[in-house]
Amino acid sequence: MTFLELARSRYSVRNYLPKTVEEEKLNYILECGRVAPSAANYQPWMINVVRDPEVKKKLEETYNRDWLKQAPVILVFIGDHRKGWKRGDGKDHTDIDIAIIADHVTLAAAEQGLGTCWICNFNAVKCAELMNLPDHLEPIAYLSLGYPADSMDATSRHLKRRSLEEIIKFDHV
View 1 (cartoon, helix red, strand yellow):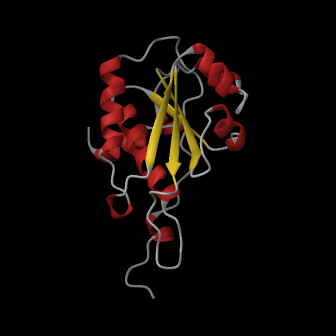
View 2: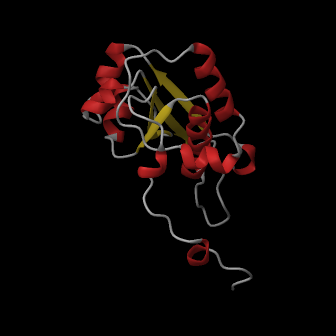
């Protein structure tokens, strides 16, 4: 499968089978995230892998959706603002670096036949409290992870995409 085919096959899964994600697959996916690039290679990230039903139940209090309860794994991406690279004007790139590692994980999961869904609309303050995170650590995104209960034919799931001509400019200043 080419990278483009892989990228086109990935979609946001909101219906999971009650099937455990194998350790080998989970470790492979996490390794794909570990090697993700980051600004100045600072790697300002942590991932909390949530599988325990009691921990998941607490986490679900921060994003109460029935479909999330189906996911056998929830990955919590945590940014470390003390480690994040800061641009000359002070812009903190931690969120960008978290997006990069999360994207590596989503594509690695798709390659392994697993589905994911990015979740950013959760109560980050409550999540940080539940996890006893100090102020410099911020829960930035969740990814649900598991075997999709529906077909992985993403063609009907992707929204219409803008053409290259609409989004690409060459040598424009």
